[in-house]
Image: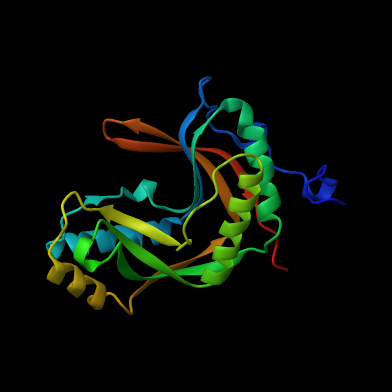
Length: 217
């Protein structure tokens, strides 16, 4: 069967009607993106890391615990009429992979220590599988008109962003101090399409649709 043809019964996608907690507004969805949700125990651990970094004098706009996630693909504005096509593409990409485990470990910055703008936690163990999953999503969504990524993917969890470039020495010390730290592991079993609504207190993310990876057994 052509992989881009009709879904076989056993690969039927999870359409938005099955899992939408809030329908997108009629004009479209601002800053829609595909991501992996994190378990509560890891969120708690990462929140603790943020507190430790504040204690070290790191000043950043910290990502709220409920907004921490593993981003795989930004879509930008998503018209409501394209929601099903995006869900189909997600399902096809997810179905190519069995569920796998990642470990959150180490701290780094983008684009580099001397011009740090983003502070993140890295991902190890099955990181190559994650990269392939992201590439599959990028290709499937590219086939239906979404811009493909122009740079290589590096999976990470964003702890915070810097409004002003922090001192080199401080960031170098933080990266070194946490180089061998492991913050927890989690299983990637599904990918989630989110909409992002900007509010005065910060962005609010709402799940629109989910696509399951295969059972590894």
